[in-house]
Length: 375
Image (cartoon, rainbow, N blue to C red; front, side):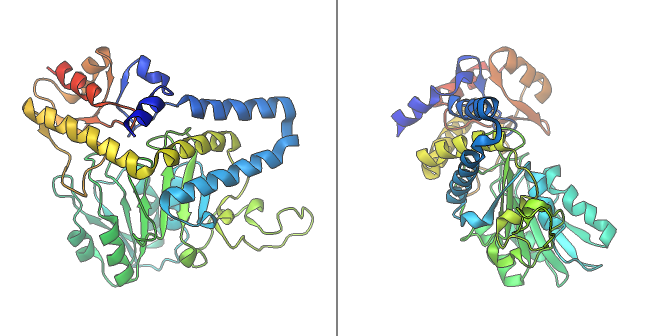
């Protein structure tokens, strides 16, 4: 597999320019994704809408690839423009009653806060769960759930600490307590294994531009078929309907599957790129991708600790991810990131730490180079 990773590294031209370590932010394209985008552009340039059946086939191929990645039925996968869109489908789809609440960790990225915070206008409360040194403990989530809790919303991986939440245990708690389990998957999907069935996840949304290595303006929304009909559809459109080709008679009948969430024209160009990225990840195997990323980040943590740097990210078994945050010694995080950029390493500051997020095409040698560049 090492040779396979070395081979695929050559499809990332960014490696000739910089050591790119911000896949938790925005990822660069591989030449495979770029070729997929170019193919669609040329098709539309040369043939216009005459090749729409070809595009429809590509969309369904991407749907199957996304389903394979999370162990879902393709009929449970819809394409969205971003993580927030999918989270809003759930936040706005639940039949809330005044006095209901949603359990939410205090350290969530804003994309998984504002869809729920907006429900205060309906009389819905947020029950905040505080982290413990970057960790969100399952016991704290369970204690926060009460008779009026309708949902637990949490990230696959916390963006500021790199903590990988125990989705399987949280899912069991939610199932036992009869509440919806909604996951912001963007900081793990494409880097770590996930099984939406084993984790009892009701809804998951993830934009494509981070670990999925796909274009911005693309994303995947999973909604379990067991709860789909319980949710109202907040933004139905003509393509949400079974009878969408009938332009003159209006029959409000939603698709019985995830297509109900694809309300209007899709980002076909972006999905062409997303499809290539998904095929690349699934071709490598998400288990192998996870082993590769965790091996690289384990190596980085050992090197940092040998140099006396404090690693903030939890690194125990089952809780580590592709994100490593560590505390600089001599400079502020902002200044050190700027210095590292001049030395050829892209990192970002987060809460006084340096955040490093390598992907499978990065190498152990690049981690060694990074640590040697640290003052």
